Length: 43
Image 1 (tube, rainbow, N blue to C red):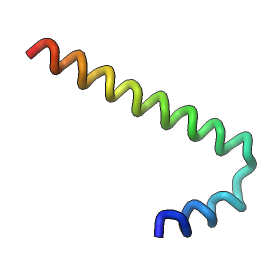
Image 2 (image 1 turned 90 degrees about the vertical axis):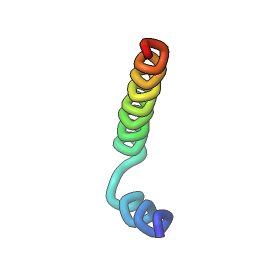
Image 3 (image 1 turned 30 degrees about the horizontal axis):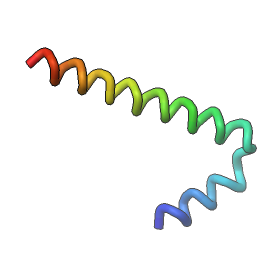
Image 4 (image 1 turned 180 degrees about the vertical axis):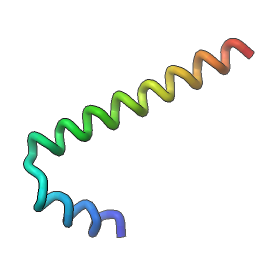
């Protein structure tokens, strides 16, 4: 199901846009991970 959704969007966006989305997503995930680590060490 997820693969079908991705394939639909793949046709509508260029590689450049998809790379930008992947980078932004990665930064957000990394930020949440760092925040989780920091709050975990404070407690």
